[in-house]
Image (cartoon, rainbow, N blue to C red):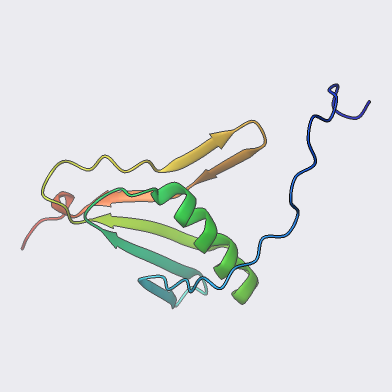
Length: 103
């Protein structure tokens, strides 16, 4: 009655983990915000990794981080900058280092 469908299988509800997560760069800015920066040359599943970091940083510092992926790869950046699902909207900025003036 709650979701309009029958249960077909009960799923495991424990997710044991001993995974160490180490963001590339996290700092408090002079205006009080928390900056989280990841430096990437490839796009390897970045949206889900950034979401995981968001949650960890948010819990640790009790405020949402400003998140940026700085792309340093040789090819044009093809890193997704968001997750959009039925009950989830998450995004962060992706900046290609080539957008900056070398001087």
